[in-house]
Image (cartoon, rainbow, N blue to C red; front, top):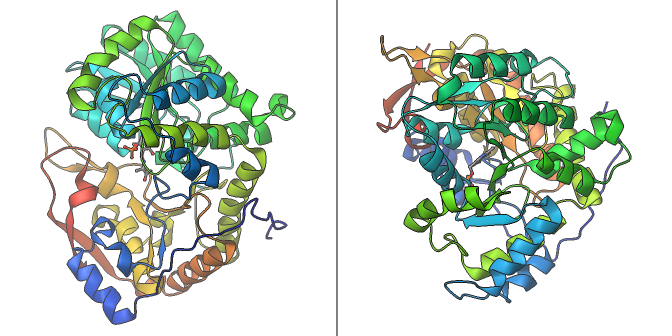
Length: 463
Ligand code: F0G
C-alpha cells in the first residue's frame, strides 16, 4: 500500500536539463567506466542516485548568503556566522570547518588514534573506516544484531548493543581513544539511533573516561525518526531533539554535504577548549587556517543557512516520505530491500535479489550495472567490494554480513515521478533477475585498504 501523498514544501524555479542516453551509449559508457559506477560520466546518466552527498539543491536563502562571503584568511565574518549557527542549532562552543567529512575524519583520527588502537562504532561508513585502517587502527562494529537482518522492522536498527560495546572496552581498555556512533547508520541501511541509545553510549563513555563522538552527517534525519518512533519525544520539535542528541557527545564529525544542505563542506564541533586545541594543528597542516578549514568564506555562509534549514519540519517530513514512497513502490513489485526504509536512501538486499550470484562475485555491483543498463540510473553497490577485508594471514576476502545496493535520494532535487520511473526500471530488472548470470572480477584495485570500490576496474564473467 502506498501512503498518502506528501507534497513538496518548495517550488522549482531553476531547472537542470538531463537526457536519457540510448542503449548503445549506455553499453559504451559501462565499458569505458570498467563497469564501476564511479567511472561513469554524469552526462551518461538520467537519474543519479549514486549518493546524497553534495548533490542536493540549495535554497534561495543559501544562494543569497553566498554573496555575503567574507574571504579574509583569518577571522572572516563568515566563520562567525557559522559559529553562531552551530551554537544555536547544535549547542557546541567550538567549530572547525573542514573541506568535507573525510577531512574531519583525517583530523580526528590522525590526531587521536595510534597504531594498534581499537575504535568502537555502531558501524563506520567507508571513508571513516578507511581513515582508521590507515592510522593502523581497527574499527569494531557494536551495532545491534537486528542491523544485519534486512527484514527486521526494529525501529532503531542503527543502535549500539551496549553489552557488545562494554565487552570491547573491557577487552581493550588502554587502546580505545574514542567511541563513535554514526547517525543515521549509512552502512546498515540509513537506519536511525534512538536518543535513549545515544544517552546510554554517552554514559558508558563517561564511565570509562573515553571521548564520545557522533558522525553526524545525517543528524536531522535521525532526529526526525526519533520524533516519529520514540514515544517520549513525539511532541518535541525537531530542533530540540537534535540538540538533545548533540548533548550526549563530546564532539561531532560532520560531512555537511548531507543534512546541512551544502554542495561542499565539513566540520568538527567540540565542547572543550582543550579538545579544540588538540585538533587544530592537523587542521593547519591539511585543511587551512582554523577559521576556514579548506572552504571559501561563501561556503561557510551557505553552510550556516543550511544548518538552520535542515530542522524545518515540513522539509524533513517530505524528505522522509519521499524515500518511503520509493520503498513502497518497490515493495509492490516484490523487490527485497532493508526494512524499515531508512532516512536518505533505499538499500536493496542484493543477496536476496540475486541469490544465484555468490557474494565474492559482487552481486550488489552486478545489480548496479543492470539498473544502469535498464534505465540509465546510477546507484551504488555497498557489499563485498566496498566492505570486504583481506584476511591478514590467508589473504582471502572476508565478506561483510550485508550485500546492499543503495539508491540515495538527493535532497530537494528529484520529483516523485522521477522515483516512479526508478521503481519501474528496478522492478523490470527484478522480473528478469534469473537471466542475469554473471559475476565480477576485480582487474585492478588501489593498494590502500578500505577504498577499493572507488577506483576498482571490474570485469564481468559468465557464471
Ligand atoms: N560519514 C558518513 C556517515 C558518510 O556517509 C560520509 C560520506 C562521510 C562520513 C564522509 O563524508 O564524503 O563529505 O567526505 N558519505 C557519502 C555517501 C560519500 O555516498 O554516503 P565526505
